Amino acid sequence: MSDSNTTNFANPSTFILLGVPGLEAAHIWISIPFSTMFVTAIMGNFTILFIRDPSLRMPMYYFLSMLAVTDLVLCTSILPKMLGIFWFNSREIDFSTCLTQMYFFNCFATMESGIFVAMAFDRYVAICDPLRHSTILTNRMVAKIGLAVVLRGSLLVLPYPVLASRWPYCKTNIIPHTYCKHISVVNLACADIRVSSYYSLSVTLFVPSTDLFFIAVSYIQILRAIFNLPTKDARLKTFGTCVSHLCAILVFYIPDVFSTLMHRIGNNLPLYFLIFMANVYLLVPPMLHPIVYGMRTKQIRDRLLSLFRT
Image 1 (cartoon, helix red, strand yellow):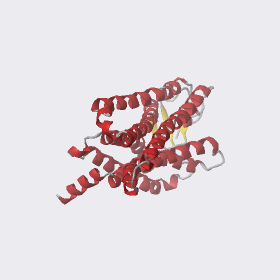
Image 2 (cartoon, one colour):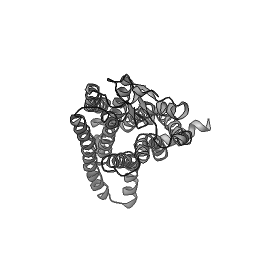
Image 3 (spheres, one colour):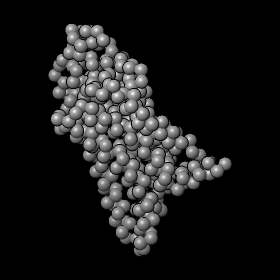
Image 4 (cartoon, one colour):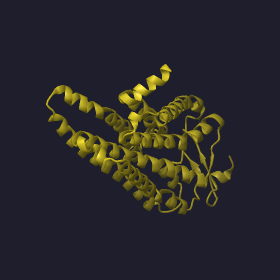
């Protein structure tokens, strides 16, 4: 690596991703669980997308398909380059490519949070007002909700790369991470980056807290409706339709909150631990979501079983 990678240069045309600093010798071994999660996520989410069954033409499956697409983008936006670092020591990444990567995984993570709100709304209507479910959640309404989710994610995250592209980078072009995490990139700027830092912190706090609030409100109403059902069997059966959604929410938000807290307050933690948590947040949910919905959704489970029998 030349000296120009570390000192005395103007804005770099490329950044250098270090992978997992301090554990370079173990990169091949680290790649094994990551590549396994990647392959599982790709296969699982493509399976969800390509299942064809008339009984699945309902709002929840459309939202689940949107979730599968966002999970696929989250995986493919970071894993190929990460595995290139681990397997081939291919550490260079073009400046514009780095900003594009930064935009896509933040954008689609924000979209994914919005999809969970849409799914909670679907469960609320299905349980609290079942007779009007088909008239409220029409295909047109589902399309509008999907468009709103996409626009919110796209616009909220757009300032990340726009601001990052405006800062001068004259300290170093070495990023101690496996991908172009926003805060890791802007911290390399030799300028006052408080605008970027405060904006990203605001989005990081605003999006999950707002979405979790609406999800909580939906489930409070759902639980009230369930407790008003006449029999225990009816209550359990109705609540069972929400279990896969609740599991998917926990799988997504717990790593997200933990990773965010560790990066903000975990200054005394080893850097490799913070990097592992950042990768877990982006890899584990896409791997587990199809498994959760495949096991818990009867129509999907039955369709998969019928495919294997033929």
